[in-house]
Image (cartoon, rainbow, N blue to C red):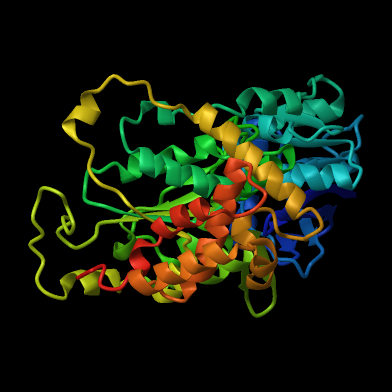
Length: 513
């Protein structure tokens, strides 16, 4: 007898429906075809043990399991549950009232028939709804994640026996229903860190506001303990709230990577990722034998914070250059290619020198001649070229730390950022793929960032006296446009340019002595 149901294979951040067919006929042995990997092939042992645990048996005949289409590689252990149900139906050990073919079924079995959580549930649920399936049978721990998708019966089961009794009609399981919009609305502002907790550092908070308003990348240079990490962690709290589409896209990436956690639902706040400097190239950008999203994709629609930037491997930093420009990661292999989105803000921090005290107002730098410049040269020019704001962070004085003056909170700053982003949305409404000032190509900078003759004179003088490099020109114009947007100004004024020029510390000649 032939039994058929459906599962799914995750490819990139999308899913493909897989047909699972099982036949039981005269003969011997268990055969699995359809390009399964080792984990899929091992399902025979898990399925057999689970069947015995609940009083069923594995047929001692020829059992053929086909996973179609056969040219797509099947990975992981999430095909256990559909294979087990099909084996039971094909061997006529159960009589079903509900049709297996109406459902997408996924789940990893333990030896006692309990279901373990799986990865990539959200893209599978989206594809199941798109293909018109009645429901999605999956482990109960993954059900809240799948329930984000409306118009699909999400049936969470604890054991294989629960699934058997559901299809036999002996047990009713109420589909899990989630009000996605209400969940999204109530979780949008759930940030633990707030700029109201920061004493002093008003100039750095201003730089962070400008970065958030224009989507600019930032590098902070300062001695240990100056507050660089603390400030970076608070940046997501002043970024505009995620849209529902962005939240779904972000959740999908974390689902594929298995980073959502048990019984997790929609990610409604902007992600903040802070990998250690020992990270490998593939872990940062994505890839591997079975390509997974890297840290830059997990930062999609959020912030990637690289603490102590010069300590990262140069190869790892250099592979970020293309994603920073194209806002996506393309991973190609001989037979296939996958693409992961990577629209993130890069926030980096670094000490000014190996000892950390170059240009410190109180402590003396003990680095030898040329050491500071060699330390800064660990960051390549092309990567530095993609960072718009260079901010010097100085330590907070004792008086500032102990002052009880109220500090401006993230919510107030965020309101100004949202207003500036609305101006940019109108400005780039007809431009595909451009949503903020930081994304403007050079040709558009000339059209959008028009400055007066007096402003041009100021910029020329600044570049000559401060020794600013040519690459600083476009960056200053983009940042000054953002400052003007924050001020609600139609044109870039001299004061906007003057402030933007301050944020090019590393472009100044002789900055490192």
